[in-house]
Length: 403
Ligand code: CTP
Image (cartoon, rainbow, N blue to C red; front, side, top):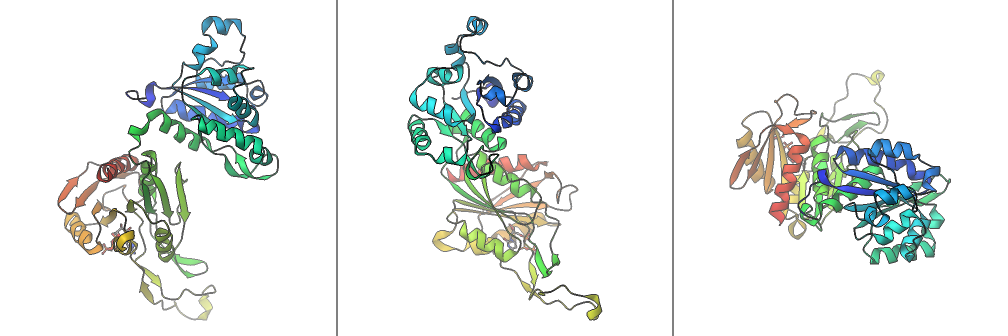
């Protein structure tokens, strides 16, 4: 599937009958926003949960429902329909649809389309836990996987039927990411098979159970890098300090508070091909945090003794055989940016430093970044850009370095 971008791609979206069918609507919105065409097929059961009108309105295309509709057959036969897209996506893929597809049944438009197509197929299953775990369903899934069908989800969690476990439809963002990955093909995913570790956000170092020391890092740049690496196919672990940001699609997130927890979670994520240390780790912590809340009446302000936190970047740069092949540090500087970045590169033992001038308005906590990429023998100055564009560029450079 080379040559085209998401902008001239089309997805044939089969909407099956399940409570999760409503999630097809935000998925269509995401696809349309990314410039992907969506042509919906709605099964009879699916129409019990979402209306053809809402699908048509969001997809801006006709909704196909009947196998033997004369008009539809006149305009476009079902064979042609099944081949009119770059990818067929089934959301939600019910136990019934999965069983039909696995056995080559073709009693309605959806199953006929799945049998008649020569295009790749992605299924996002959703069903009751017991139905998912039933040997018949698992047998059908294995058959479809052997036939080359791709799957996204199901997730674990509480279900509409009141049970808990695997069977929940993957989130629309996750299905969207899987669709884009399939549409763009392996060339767009040069980090497939590579493992990445990213630290992001501030740390929070407690003083007592209600107070602590932290900083203004928003985590945006680190989260954007984790997302950009995942988009290129990497298996990403994102070790995040306390931030209010959603987890990027396809990224494994480990939430931590303190520098010591961040170090432990980072070490647990090894081995990795690349480590990107974006977190604004607090350099110091209170030696012994108080076990109970400090009270004013107990006399004047408390005398706090500080000790140095572990340096996560320096520690992981020096982990011997377990060291990521490429270790990247960040530097937040207010002056002599290049000199400080060079010194930091040597001091921390990393391969690259990405330095930014935090006196620039809108960098700390904002949406943009202007960076210097400093390696052992080169310096590049990148124009100011949105943090996700900077992230995409960093991810591309990582891919080139690991190729
Ligand atoms: N870093 C880290 N662990 C720490 C401190 C910093 O992993 N305890 C990492 C940051 O994630 C970043 C890099 O080291 O990638 C640089 O952090 P910075 O705070 O700018 O540097 P410092 O070593 O603290 O130096 P200084 O405060 O003197 O600028």
